[in-house]
Image (cartoon, rainbow, N blue to C red; front, side, top):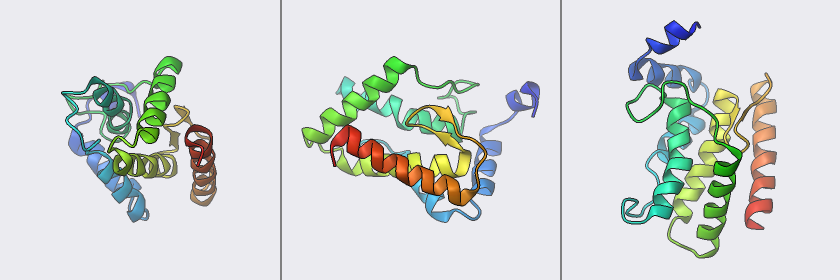
Length: 154
C-alpha cells in the first residue's frame, strides 16, 4: 500500500481490516475490543492514570484504528523513555493494588492479540518477523510470561 492510499483510508477501513484479520482469531478480537475501554478510574482527575491510558490503550488504538481523530496519521512507536514510564506506572499500580488490575489483565491480553494478529509487539514497540500464527502465538505467550515475571515478579 502506498502512503497516499494509507492516508486516504478511513476508520471504516481500519475496522474492516481488524475484522478481516481476526476472522479466525475470535479470542484475539475480543481481547483487543475489551482493552480499548481503559482503566476503571477517572483518568481526567489523575494524571498518572491518564498517562497510563495514553501509553496503553492509546497505542492499541494507533495500531488498530489509526485513522481516528484521536490518533496520528502514522503511528509511531513509543520512545524508550515512554516505554520505561509505562512499565514503571504499571508496576507501581500493580503493587499499590490501585484498582486497575482488571484493566491490566485486558491490556496484557490485547498485547498478546496484537502480536498474533498484527505482528506488532507493543511491549517492545517492534514489528515481529513474519512467522506463522502458531509461532506468533507461542512467542507472544512466552514473551508475556517473561514480561510479567520481570516487571511484576509473578
